[in-house]
Amino acid sequence: KDSVLVDVGEKNEGAVPLVEFVSDLSTPKHPAPTPGQRVPVVKVGGLKGGGIALSHLKAKTALGWEMAVKAHAEKQRVRGLVSSSVKGGFIVDVQGVQAFLPASLADLRPVRDPKKMVGTGVRCYVIEVNASKRQLVLSRKAVLEEEAGKRKVKITSELRPGEVRIGRIVRVSSESLIIDIGGLEGTVRAPDMAWGKPDPAAFERGQKLKVKVLVKPEKEGEFLFLGIKQLQPNPADALKRRFIAKSTVSGKITEVGAHGVRFEIDPKTNAFVQAAECDTDIVYKIGDPIKAIVLGVDCTNFEIRASTLKFSEIHDRKRVAQYMKAPPPLTLGQLLSPEDKG
Image (tube, rainbow, N blue to C red; front, side):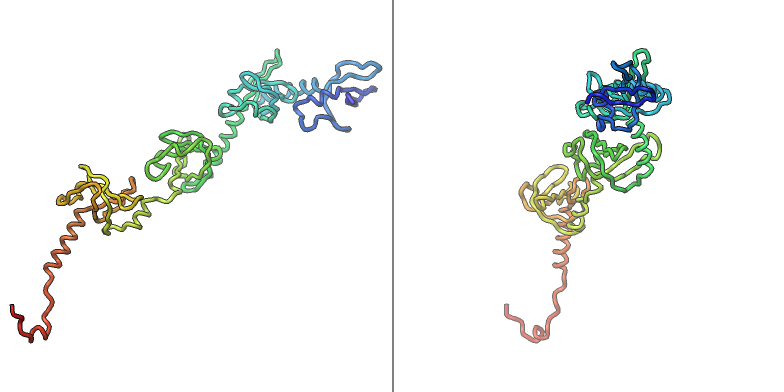
């Protein structure tokens, strides 16, 4: 009930307190050994009535220490289990050895909720060994940076300009978004956030979204540039299809100034007439109806560029052409009939 009998090859069997296996944090899934299983032990004394007193934890600690010292010398990774959260970091059980993992070296970014790390397995490098005090200092961040570097090289080699990736926003500013696309961070500049005026407030940290690869880094130190608006329809294209150049549009004046006249075609569409394209014979007043000729589309403000001057010129030419039009030839009846008096 309270001991584990172990054959160590001597005349008498050895006994290990069962509690040493139950409290062994390095094997949480299998707390109690099974018959036939091999386990490390160390002799710690004798038992009353015969037998050998053994310790499993002391043996694992001794082996774990040797392994950790060797891993430090050979710069190899070690596996451990986070047993508790303490001030400034975490205590990690590395095969029976209690090691310290500083909070600053626990992750690539500050750990916001230390309690969530307790009970999790971690891979670390041993960065400091104090043999006299038998203390270890670990770095999980070094492992994560190493793996991130490998992923970065792999993703960079696979990237192709124009392809679409799923990314996660890691930083938002008024000038750009930083997007992580699986180990490689890219920048979305303000002009590539949205068609028209960008609104950084529409994005938040941790948000997942699709991005298009615009420019991939070819050399070390070069940036990866991504785009969001490139995956959305350009409003200017829809305006060009709807408002063909040289066609006539009408609306109501909403703004009059030295720079020109702006009018509303419909609740979602505005047109602008630059001062040079305004007919000076017209008095422009806010609220008055207006007609103009379409010149094109402003792809920055998504407005129709129009001209009242050209509309007046075309209208005047039509009136002159109507006036100069030759009268129709007289019919035979008109030639034979006498003229009406008066």
